[in-house]
Image (cartoon, rainbow, N blue to C red; front, side, top):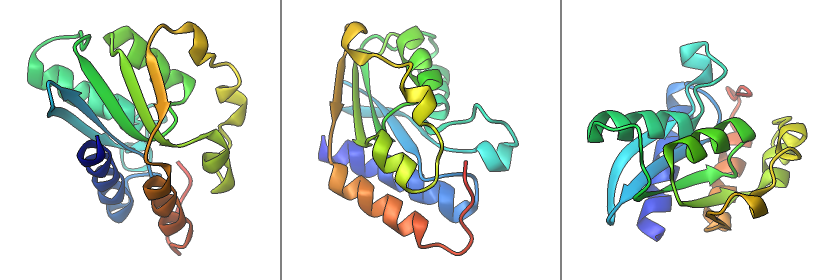
Length: 152
């Protein structure tokens, strides 16, 4: 699991270093192999839906030639927003491992709390677990300390 969260962190750093968007990266894993990668591209793509999870799902679907990822899991640096959770559910992904929680995201300036309140993970029928929070908090601290940071 650690290597997959590290890959998600690497994606997030790649995105913020390129000015693509906020500190959000994700990877899709099938049978212990990363099959999709993505990071937030809201700023570079000038599109509010280009979140890390969406980019990783898109990459995995393209590479695997399918719209269903029901034999996959996702590792993401922050708890998925409702839009991304919807995409995860539509893709059939059965396990979500996230680093930072909604309070952590809010603490670095993202105003997502209102959206998270709509999400009730207990009724989704999937594994939904916080994982490797300390490493993801380091990502958030690094992002917050950047002079060139932009929200989204």
